Image 1 (tube, each protein chain N blue to C red):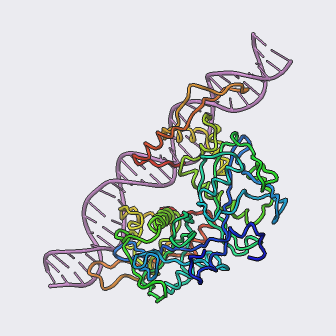
Image 2: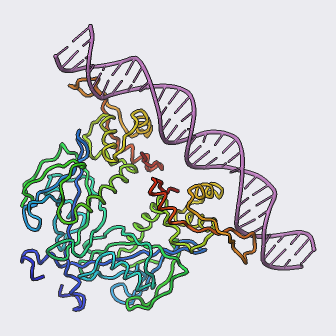
Image 3: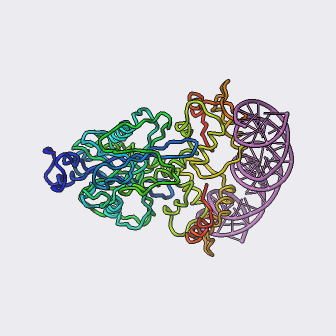
Length: 233
Length: 233
DNA sequence: CGTAGATTGTGTCCGATTTACACTAAGTAC
DNA sequence: GTACTTAGTGTAAATCGGACACAATCTACG
């Protein structure tokens, strides 16, 4: 900081963290990944995964790092939501936090053991424990953002395995948006977009008529977007 | 910082600023307010108004302060957009910036003389000079956000005087969204929402048939929202 | 082996919404 | 009083969205 004029030095006295809402999806619905804090403050409470941003660390990089340290995953959907700056939001000093949300395929997830998380686990979005800091507020902002995004961008697929059934996709939307949808109308609409490639493959081992599998055709989506298409559900 | 553990101190070595895109609207269309930098770095270039966030200053408060110092206005529409954190975005050190946009009634604006702005002025959104720092990127993010918001919330009125004509309102939307709209369809739609109170008053002094004046009925809007209404244009 | 149970997969009709479109009305300027 | 400018208004066609029910296909189990 020596290169700074004296009068500016007092401004370099705050810290920045990133906190992430990691969304996953399985048969039970939409879930988020929480860590049990192994250190003060709020030791023993559940919290969003997060960490301080290094002095020479890019914001997005920091968010990716936290996610990777926790899940071992790179290359996932990650989006900044907003920054929370209440003066007293952190008991140890002036720490602002930039909230991100990410979407991961829950089956790819394996806990990585890291120093700051005594324990980590998935929680159904409906049944969350109390959270440390202002993390409930952060979560709400991220959930609201996800709900908007998922209707305007084909990002829901980030939560699903490569191959999925239309029913699974519908349940995904239903559990994110908290609404019930009509099966026929849903299929009509999503198939009409011509973004799903039907595979010559079906479920097996299920005790009922097996569903056909589909794959999201990203190249097709990019092409359509270039032609002016915009996703909407 | 004395209360911090030694190993955390190095994290408290970055600074935070707020930068604001101040939108205004007049006959010529959508405009933003830029300041001509009176100090290094980028002295003499046009830039978004902004300032460092004080060590004990709330984020939103800092954004309001900057706006007020520049325009003398308080109590205006202000929304956080996102945080820009590239390591090298500021030549003097690690300064992250939180972007805000605000909507003001351009006729209320008067420049306040402040130390860091040698000069300030309105620029048509179509004809902007090159901007300092990464302010073009920030502006784009804010403009994108405004375009989305203005179609989902009745915030366009923040840019208009209390009383306005339907044509003015339509031109406002057209210049924000960059699209032309059909006059009859626009009127039908906006009036059907029942948010505009027709006044017993008309333009005068214009060299053509005078238009009726309307006012946005905020109380009515709040009531409708409570009943489940949601604004869409 | 056949019956029960579960989920998949499919089409139509109706009402609501959106779009396209052109002329008369009311004021000022000269 | 005529030319100019913008305000103000309705209808028809196309499109979109929502409601709705039943046959097909597989497993499990007796």
